[in-house]
Image (cartoon, rainbow, N blue to C red; front, side, top):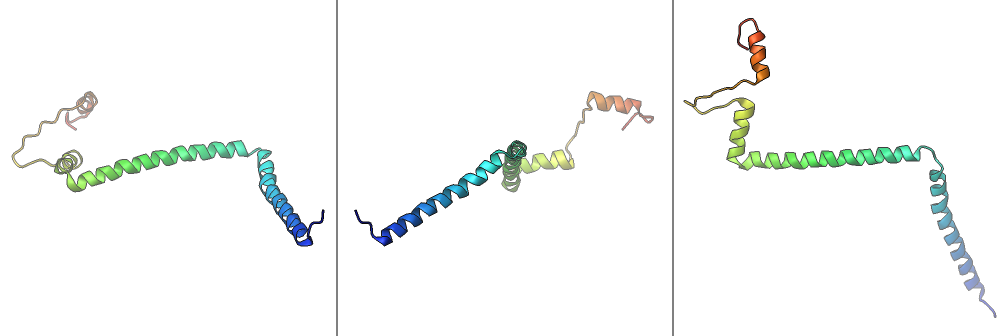
Length: 113
């Protein structure tokens, strides 16, 4: 059976291309598989992925809080009271001390914090 020279050339080229593709994929993978640093690097990558997930979760929480502070009056009031100590005029504020705070107040020379 006679095969045209052009067909033989293209068949050879295709076979060489497949061989180069296999070598290009296999050789680096085989070299990396024997590298002793690979398990350590994989562990670091997994730890970084866990940290990324924690940061993304924190960012989502902060985004929700920012949005609530923009539109929700009750959230704004709660933050103003807790963080800034703000109260309404003529409002009576009763402050209860924790056990640790009371012990520290008694231990101080003036008796008050």
